[in-house]
Each structure stands twice: as C-alpha cells, then as structure tokens.
Amino acid sequence: MDYSQNNHNWDEFRWEKEIRQDEKRIRRYFQILPSCMDLPDEEDSIINKLMAQPDLVPSNADSSNTEKSLDIFFEGDEEHLDISDLKERRYSDIYLKLHKLSLEWNIIFVRDLRQSLRKTGLITTCTLSRLIARSIDIIELEDAQMPQFKISLLKRVLHGINDLMGQINSFSRQQSTLKAQLDIFCENLHNIREKAIDVLHETRAKK
Image (cartoon, rainbow, N blue to C red; front, side, top):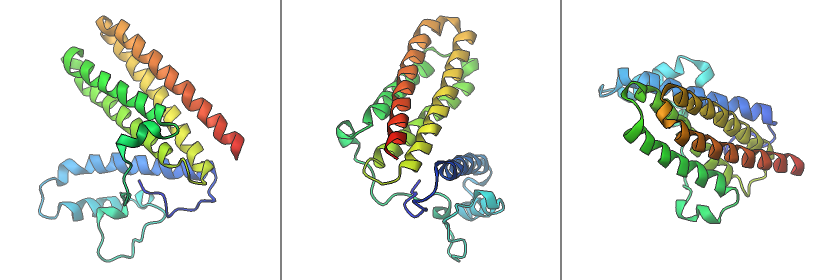
C-alpha cells in the first residue's frame, strides 16, 4: 500500500493502527470477492460492501470522488521496487531470507503436506506472502525520514513471524514425518526474527 500521502508526524502507534486497518481491509476484500466475482458490476459491488464499513476506508481516501474505484481502498505505488536490485539494498536480507523460506514452504506444501492439512497450509502461504510484502515496505523506507513508520512495520513483521512459527509448530505436531524439516524451518525463522529485532533497536536508537 502507498502511504506517501499520510502524515509523516504520526507516532508508531498511529502507524500501527493504519497498518492493522490495511490488513483488515485486505481480509474483508477476499471475503467479499467470491460472492461478487464475474458479476457485471463486480467492482461496484465490492466497493459498496467495503464502503458500508467506514472503519475500512483509508484515512487519506477521497470518498467524495464520484468516480469511485478500488484505488480508494488499495492504492498502488507509481514506481515499483526493482527486485533485481534488492541484494544491494539495506535490510534486504530480511526479504531475501523470507523469500527463500516461502519457496521451501511451497515445496513442502505441494510435495509433502498431508491432504487434510492443505487448507490450513494455504493460511501459512498467505502469512509468508504478507511478511514478504512488509519486508519490501521496510526496504522502500530506507531513505525516507519516517522512523515511526518503519518501527510499526517491523513490529508487524515480528508479530507475523511469531504467528508463522506457531503455525509451523502445529504442522510438526500433526504430521510428525515433517518434524525434522520444519524444525530447521523454524530455526531459520528465528534467525530472521532476531535480525528484525536488531533493525528495530537500531531504528529506535536513531529517532
């Protein structure tokens, strides 16, 4: 999501509230989508259902615009991060390690995970995707004077990693044949968590 129009003077708690709202908006969108998919007025139907919940409307949205589109809720950046340059960017190791783990998880999901666990496994896939998106946000903030925003993003990343570790440990208990493999997965997650904590402390020290 593009936060460039928001108030740069917000504290970390105001930013965290905005990020949580963004996550809630995304969850609601995917709840609504199946019932609206392929309708002639699909986008209008989704917009109306989202607008019916004022707490889902971004604080910087121009809801008075008569030509409403989903851009009100999901703003896209005009300039996208060049993935090929990630290795050269500060804090990129968090993204790169999460990306590597997501590839490992996809292999486990397709090749090894029991059929009865596949639905829950999709939640883990989505959790990893959300973490990767947040880690890219952190990279894009490298040169921005928005330490409070970065702190809030890092806190959401840490929350997501804790949640993800709980999910992986649950799979280990339910499918013991994967325990050794998933223990290594969790160890790598723990290392990413420690790196994120280091960046959080570093960012707080520079405020």
